[in-house]
Amino acid sequence: MCRRCGRSGVLLPPISLGFWKNFGDAAPYERSRAIARYAFDHGVVHFDLANNYGPPYGTGEETFGRLMDDDFRPYRDELFIATKAGYDMWPGPYGNWGSRKYLMSSLDQSLRRMRLDYVDLFYSHRYDPETPLEETLQALVDVVRQGKALYVGISRWPLEALKFAEKYLRERDVPLLIYQGRLNLLDRAPIEEGVLQFCREHGIGFISFSPLAQGLLTDRYLNGVPEDSRMALNFSLKQSALTPKLLQKLRELNSEAIARGETLAESALKWVLEQNGVTSVIVGVSSVAQLETNLKVI
Ligand SMILES: NC(=O)c1ccc[n+]([C@@H]2O[C@H](COP(=O)([O-])OP(=O)(O)OC[C@H]3O[C@@H](n4cnc5c(N)ncnc54)[C@H](OP(=O)(O)O)[C@@H]3O)[C@@H](O)[C@H]2O)c1
Image (cartoon, rainbow, N blue to C red; front, side):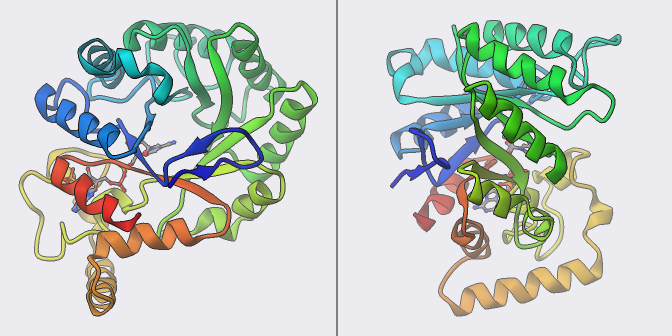
């Protein structure tokens, strides 16, 4: 069921689990635990985290650390664990963007919160237009040399910076394992901008975040905004995004999915997974039932 990640030895499940929103202190621990256990028991062995996942920041990783102790420690070698640094994490000039200072100390903090000796994958979470790319990339090389990460990735870097990163890392024998970008039925930028093609041609895996557009590409918002939905509960998905035009498009996509005997969520995930060069999609789920539905596509 797993797919090869670019030209590497790493195999990833087609559906991976993201810890952005539903694993922090704001979520009930037993619900997060049930989701993670269900995931692992059904072959979802890749968990995607970042220093600032929660809310509040850091608590997605803390929950993961608790899960390690409660459930997963005996299975550490069966899991592929990623974390990232790049967004604002702590006050002052050293808790954000792409400096060596920030990336190195952030990874140390992440390892403590996650109760791990090393992560399988460490990402630069975003492109920093101010820091020399060499500095950011050398920090990625060095965390691998230090044994704190086995592989490195980048997320949301523009194509020209991706090209630079691919060459820089390859020349230092720490090849770029994977690129993380947003690709879904409503946002095809990685295809339009040539990122997916570059990854495919250079043996770099591609993993899509928000493949369901944070829940828009499901039946969640077709008839109003449910009280327990991400749109109702936090700011990353604004109600203003749900324009009459978008709602109309979502209803059309839903009708097309139903005509094929699928849910909108299933057809949205299938579409991403069918794009040439995509290794995996990272879903966020707020219940075991949602994950169960999403896993039907594989
Ligand atoms: N690299 C980056 O910059 C970046 C950025 C964003 C995310 N990510 C990663 O990608 C992961 C996924 O992002 P995301 O959470 O935005 O992904 P998503 O899968 O597009 O959206 C997740 C939300 O969709 C809804 N949903 C999921 N499955 C459903 C189903 N079967 N039926 C109905 N609703 C369903 C749930 O909403 P409700 O909560 O309303 O139930 C869930 O919280 C994150 O956890 C993170 O690991 C990375």
